Amino acid sequence: MSAHVLSNTGVMLGRSIRHVTRSMDTIITVTIMPIAFMLLFRYVFGGAIQAGTGNYTNYLMPGILLIAIASGISYTGFRLFNDMQSGIFERFHSMPIARSAVLWGHVLTSVVSNAISAVVIVAVGLLMGFRTSAGVLAWLAVAGILVLFTLSLTWVAMIAGLAASSTDGATAFSYPLIFLPFLSSAFVPTATMPGPVRAFAENQPVTSIVNAIRALFDQQPVGNDIWIALGWCAGILVVAYAFAMRVYRRKIA
Image (cartoon, rainbow, N blue to C red; front, side, top):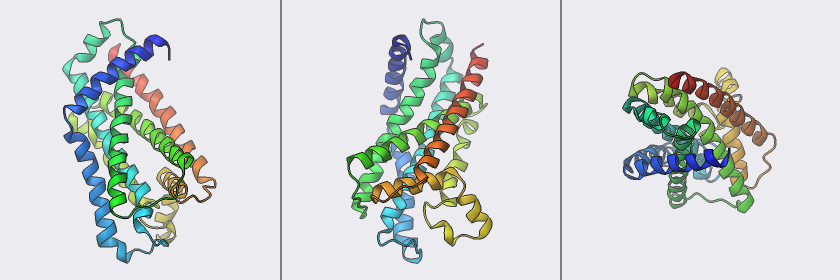
């Protein structure tokens, strides 16, 4: 990005962040559901699930973080849709600002708000017994994966927010994404699943991302999982970005 675009993006980011801070209930809502899932699986189902680990909270944490992000991006699509409907985009386009900065402001706001949610969830997890021997580099690697995952899904949210004809349409896309961790290794080992379900679980992006984060938290070798996870996230990001920009250009043409 040029200095002009960076400056404009910073202004748009500040605007979106102010909207989020004036409505903190969105962040609270995003964190409540994953925490509820963590409590449910840890204290209700945990005793009946054989995950091959002595600390089921540790096993749960990666999947819970991904559910929080998948839930959080729905608000990004909602905020973008509201901006489109309010006519504020037309006002922005009448000003000498980079047009892409408007979208990037929403995208970076999503990264910031989801990072806050992730910190809250990890803090609650620590109270529930989550423990990790991960060092600084491992934590940075986990943060990098989560940021890349957030960016990729947020650009999917951009498509929904730009193309939707209603608020329900702008947010409904996130429901399958929230459900995806349940068909992965997030809550139980894939080896315990029936054949067709296991085949799907082992070949969808959430499983590789969960496995990579879990290995980093446990300071275990990540193997190919981290490269598969990064490949999925990067691929989704590139495709979603291209589609979002195409829809955006059509909208403002």
